[in-house]
Length: 82
Ligand code: SF4
Image 1 (cartoon, rainbow, N blue to C red):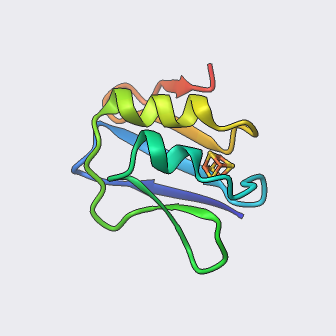
Image 2 (cartoon, rainbow, N blue to C red; image 1 turned 180 degrees about the vertical axis):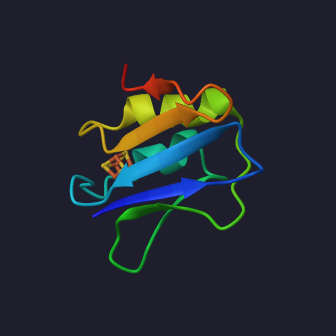
Image 3 (cartoon, helix red, strand yellow; image 1 turned 45 degrees about the horizontal axis):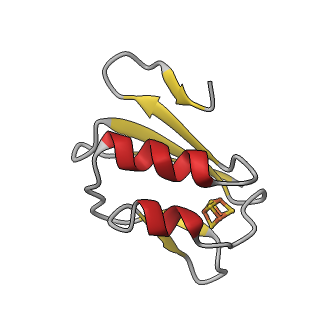
């Protein structure tokens, strides 16, 4: 299941493909204020995320299975994956 979340506190929208997520935890290292595991050990976005855009993109880039999609809030352009 792909979760799509939009947060006013972030500069970006984030989509997470939880079916693809292999629960490695790397994204949480790069953006610990944004990503966390849910009860099934699949990544989800925290209730009040507040990492900056660069950290979130780095987290997405670190994901070996490209489970995280990052979209610019203002332009709706996909920032990662390109
Ligand atoms: S880096 Fe990717 S595979 Fe690893 S926990 Fe995060 S979303 Fe899941």
